[in-house]
Length: 203
Ligand SMILES: Nc1nc2c(ncn2[C@@H]2O[C@H](COP(=O)(O)OP(=O)(O)O)[C@@H](O)[C@H]2O)c(=O)[nH]1
Ligand SMILES: [Mg+2]
Image 1: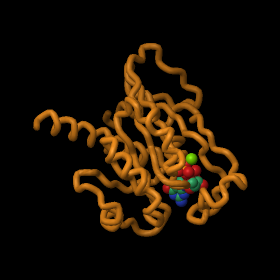
Image 2: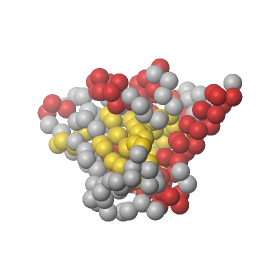
Image 3: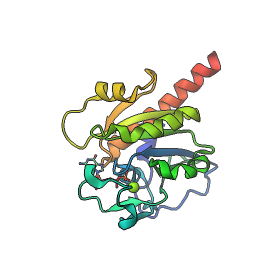
């Protein structure tokens, strides 16, 4: 998936699925509340992403903590969904999934057949990602970690330490609002999956 094919896709909000499409590939974006999952799916999807953001009500009080995400008044109830056409036959489907532990019942279905995952992290609230990373490691899903930069210097080394990431797991900086930046995260995931799969075959 080089950037040339990535850019060739239509930028229309209602782009119809190419009739020659044979294969749907699935990537899941997970992470804590307010880390930028919906933003990232919106930034890269060629269709107007379906999401299930709902205005936070009292039911979320004490559960979704908005203190780290001021101004955020919605929360994702189920998941975000977006699409990227890679070439005539291949389409990538993106699912943004809540990382809150109470949504883990969704994960088995969501991850069935998935190529891999992006764990979005806010470096100011790293603990929000622990559950997701533990769970991905346990279910042996390949993943990369993307640090969504909300301002301030990025501290990738500290983030890697705090997450106790395996040295072979890529950790990259990103701005989930930027299509270019989010695209680079997707490419790093695909490269990681490819390298890992090759290493596994070789051993
Ligand atoms: N400054 C900044 N704000 C961001 C960035 N990514 C997301 N946001 C904002 O952070 C808030 C939470 O993002 P959202 O995508 O809804 O988080 P989600 O709960 O993970 O889906 C929204 O108001 C976004 O506009 C970023 O890279 N930089
Ligand atoms: Mg969301």
